[in-house]
Length: 262
Image (cartoon, rainbow, N blue to C red; front, top):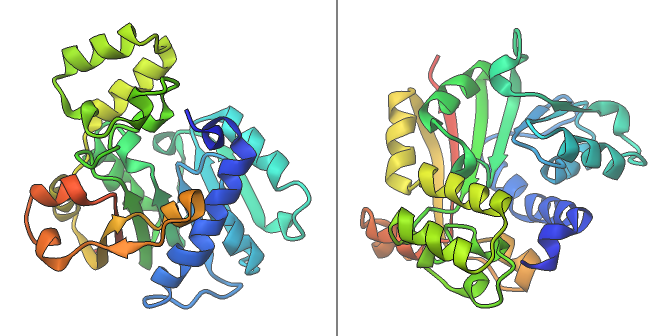
């Protein structure tokens, strides 16, 4: 496991840096962000991705996550922010939200690969979007070298071993047990195994839920790698991105901006 995964403040800071440098500029082709822009992050964790919007003075910035512990961490990390009054962090399942508020921008970065029943999730997210609102989705396709999030493992070898997560589930589970992985870590790894989001799967889900894709980019080197490892982002080759299924093996992140057709 890399230190950034146990040091939640460091992870929070890295999220904010990546969103400020790459995600917000990616959105600016499609929307003007002003103090009146409302922003929601679904699956926010500690809400590091929301910090740049708060820094910009957006007056309505909301994060929602099912983990109360992560929400409490986020409240601590934001406690001395000058625009703290504009921020609301909520520990709640979005399916339990009554009369959801609508937002100009929704963000889910590195979230959808953890979500069971992704089609139901994307249908629910429509309820949080204004008629002309946009939804940014960033995720690592399952078949990419570390699509199983094995970098989270504590084992020195398997945490750095690409593609081993795509072996049959029983064998994968046996290896995780054999190398001394904790029950909670095995559960988290199998959660991602069972959701197995791919570019093709997300395209199908978006179509079924009547979303229009406004912008899409596949990345050979995830923009977040610059913050983590000092590796400059690089877009996927067009010829690779055009090949269904195969592209998932060489794409470390896909960025989408979509709009729900009302």
